[in-house]
Structure formats: structure tokens, C-alpha cells
Image (cartoon, rainbow, N blue to C red; front, top):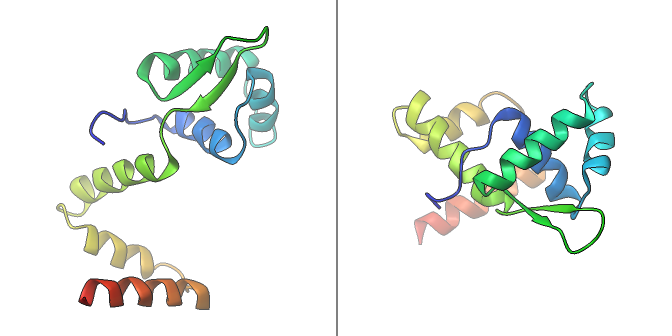
Length: 124
């Protein structure tokens, strides 16, 4: 997992779109990002070029229109971000980070069930 690069906020936004629907073209990603915020086509292209070089996305050049896919699974990036936040803001304690996150909102019944299942697995 250490070989997975840490994405910037803008890159994470593009990865989120790719995890939802991939492969995607620059034009497709530009349109989908445009529904969130104003961004130029060239900015999206530049980010994808940087992400390709960093190993965050894979570019398929077999077709006339290049398409992009995420090189890492969402869970890999989430774990890296989670570990970084826990290490920098919570003294390395992922439990303290989780407790803080849980204290900020009211979980749904499904989320409580999932949490209880996780607790039960940890007791075994």
C-alpha cells in the first residue's frame, strides 16, 4: 500500500468520479466535474496527465479518444488518507479518529448494525 501515491484534493475529486464510472474521457470527467464546480477542460487534462505520471490513473491509448481508469481501488486510497489523518491529527490512534467521527453525527440503524458486526468480529 505504501506505493500508492497520496492524491491532492483535486485529484481525489477526479478519482471519486472514476470510481463511480470508469473508464472515462477527459471530456466526460470535465462535464461531471462541471456539475460540482467551475473548472476548465485544460485543468482536468493537466490533472489527469499528472495523475498518470504519479500512477494514480491508467490511460488507455488504444482508441482515438483516450480513456482513464483509477489505478487503485477506493479502499486503498481511503486507507492511506485515514492512516495519514490518524497519524498527524490523532497521535497515530485510528480508534480515536473513529470515535471522533462517530461523535459528530447520528448513525443510521444500518450503520449501527455494521459497527456492531465489526465489534463482534474484533472480539473473536
